[in-house]
Amino acid sequence: MSYQILTPQTLPEYLLSIPAIRDFFGDDAIEAEEIGDGNLNYVFVVRSAEHPQKSLIVKQAVPYLRCAGEGYALSRERMTFEIRALQGYTCHAPKVYHADEAMSLVAMEHLKDHAILRKGLMEGVRYPLFADQIGDFLAETLFKTSSLYLPSDEKRRLIDRFNANTELCRLTEDFVFTFPYMENETNQIEPQCRAEAEALFKDVEFKRKILGLKYLFMNRTDALLHGDLHTGSIMVNEHETFVIDPEFAFVGPFGFDIGALFANLGSAYISHFYRSGDEAYRAWLLETIRQVWERFEAKFLELWRQTPSSALLTPGYLDAEALEPFRRDFMVEILRQSAGFAGCKMARRVFGIAGVEEIRGLEDPAERKEAMMRALATGRALVMAHDSIDSIDRIVEIVEKA
Ligand code: ADP
Ligand code: MG
Image 1 (cartoon, protein in one colour):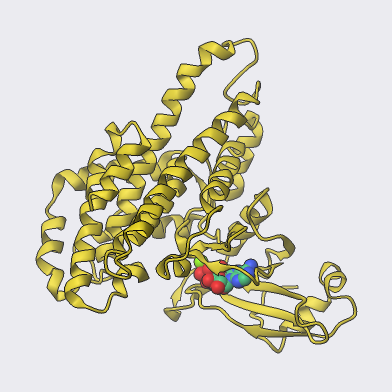
Image 2: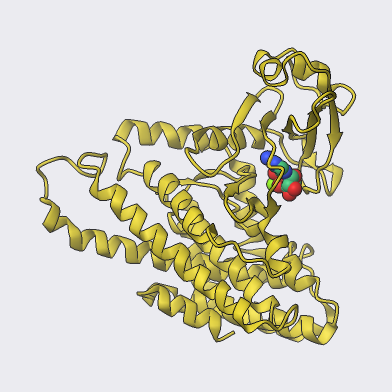
């Protein structure tokens, strides 16, 4: 079928023409309802009329930025990369039932009993398994799409499959690494923060460090990234963790997704000075940052030690013992990248286009300003220190000092 934008009226007929979807629903009639709170795409719940608990999520990209309207073109091919990433994930992602790159559409498992992590964290909910599960997700996806696991030809083919996600990579280059640190019409600077914004725009030492990180983002092809792994792209409950919405997927530096996660946990931490004042919850958030890293590192090394041959390593080249110092240095390098990207991701949310709800949504202007300045100071400190950081403790300490 050639591309057309589907609606709750036209979606059922399209879906029932697909065998995998008919298998899922049996002979039931189905109904679609649009639920998207998303900024970019249309998201529908599709339910069996007879058995409403039987449902799927269908997501379709349109050739413009949904929140900005049809005047803001953004090619719908972003869905191609979301589909490829979802299909490539081996754990902690919704099952894909049907994908149609030509229609820029995917039908996936409906996560009915899960909340968006950002919302849960704003409400002060603890997710006891989250840190380990997301640590596993990061280790699995980053390790198994890297040259530490894949043979050389497969790794290059992987890069090819994601190389054309140019528009969304460009959005990150602009909105994470550039505009939030200079005068730009897309910034959202409250009048009460004007002086602080102008000081940031003149902070040449900070801006030079950001350039280094932007260069890394643009030129490293370590592993397949989610590309936008903030707490709004994760769905959780007490037992399970799922990663959704990988439309920014591309092959980039190891530390980028880890950094995004640290930054969002850091923003949640800062917001709880005001939202709840709950010190124990803030401590849990800090502990979560530490636990994500520790689990990721342990799992990544475990996978690596089980992999005798890869694009990087030819059997017989170095024995296992001689490799260990290389592995240790390698993990420190990932940690440093993660700290640097976490810093960018925190700082960019302060004056840039898309703030985080937990901070921008604080109603009291004085509190909001204080929270923003804490986020900026933390982001800046991470960026400035990132290339000399050598333990997760140091990152936690910087966030705690906020
Ligand atoms: P966008 O790319 O437009 O931001 P998302 O993929 O983030 O779209 O989806 C928007 C919202 O739809 C999510 O915040 C979530 O509430 C809901 N959603 C998306 N995928 C699922 C899913 N598999 N199960 C349940 N809800 C989902
Ligand atoms: Mg999205």
